[in-house]
Length: 231
Image (cartoon, rainbow, N blue to C red; front, side, top):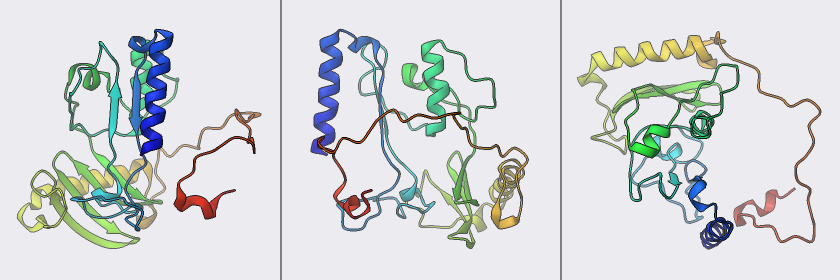
């Protein structure tokens, strides 16, 4: 945390020194979910840990700073994902999106004016298994760790996913099960053997060249729990 605090401060200082602070949008986000393995992390009051599709394994913050454009202290609970950053940055820069299907959506109205987004489902995958979907306040689970698991949670009333309310809301269950089926047909689902009509190959760069090189004389920062995985 001390290293992050220092580096963000150094970045802002340099932007101010160059006179471009007011022309620069800074977005700060993080990896998802603490492993809760004695490293100081906590996902409370959310349920679950990293590598799980409980909310504790999925949620992360997005902090945005742009003096003169984003109101200080503004808070939004809109559901977004990192796939939304590309269309957002393109919109703010006046750039055109690539001529291909883009799954993300423009968040500039949320950042600049605190607008709400049209409701859309958020899907939770573990590897290629579709495990859950969230739509608004409701989250429907259908698998967990490659095994069947069904439940419905009201995240507005029960952010910790402690009380299954599926029996009380069969109409919500049916609606979300239909949304899940649409996702399977679109993106695929290993558990049900559906390949997905719109799965696309990953993007590649022809003749790629590294942008950086390892310098053994340079002091690198690494999380202490990753030291055994170095190299």
